[in-house]
Structures are given as structure tokens and as C-alpha cells.
Length: 133
Image (cartoon, rainbow, N blue to C red):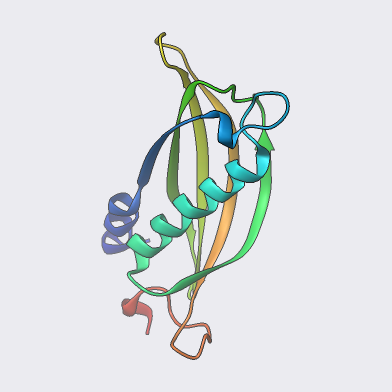
């Protein structure tokens, strides 16, 4: 991988903070899994777009691990970063970390991979970075 691509990967890292409010929780007062997936897809889309500066679409998700419940009233941070680059696609790993609002405790709660493909105006795959056109 050349230095130009490494630099683009580094600059594309995306971090989003959210508070877990009651309207995002399930009947166990923890973050609803569907909401977590929506937030992860959004963070990974932003990361892939910042990396490529092209139109990208989600084509798959892989191995989403919910390792800890995220209670209502916590803060979460989503961190998305590129882990693999293909000719027309990239894979973005997203981790969700949770923090108690009133303690210095931070734990990874969810992790998953999202694959994106760059598309042209006709929605056909296109090189994800111009250097590969």
C-alpha cells in the first residue's frame, strides 16, 4: 500500500459521539440493536466517503458483534476506519465504545465491518480512488 493511500486512510477515520436516550432503547433499557446498526452504517458511510470522495453504497455487513449491552444514559463513541482497500471497494471497521456519563470507564460494546463500493452516475462500480482509474 503506497503512502498516498495510507494518508487517505488516516485522514478518513471518523468519530461520532452520541448520548443514549430513552427513544433509542429497547424494552431492556439498552440501546436497540437496529439503532446501533444504523449508527454504524452512517459512521462507516462517512468514513468511506471521506476516504474516496466518491459516491459509495453499502454492499454488505460482516460479523457484527454485540459484546456488551449499552444502557440508557451512557455516552457512546463510534470510531470508523478503513481496514482494506480494493479496486472498487473498501472495508470499514466500526467500533462502538460506551462510557458512563459520570465515571471514567470506557468499554468496547459493539464491533463490525461494512463493505462499500464506489459507483458512477449510472450506479455501476467505479475505481474507489482516482489513482486506480
